[in-house]
Image 1 (cartoon, rainbow, N blue to C red):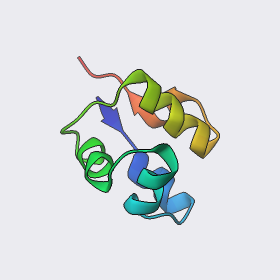
Image 2 (tube, rainbow, N blue to C red):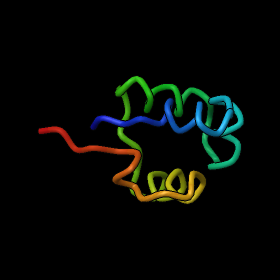
Image 3 (cartoon, rainbow, N blue to C red):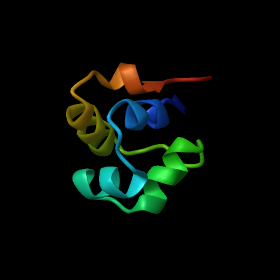
Length: 64
């Protein structure tokens, strides 16, 4: 699954560590999601969208 969390973090001037704390995961989890090594749970995807005040589709794009 493609994502643009890094772009959203840059827009909000927030580090991986800060974002991880806000959504209740580790910095390594955020890093793995950004690199496409880990697809977040639906609950985490919603948490990220809520944090950035956007829709999940603004952050994540499904690839076949």
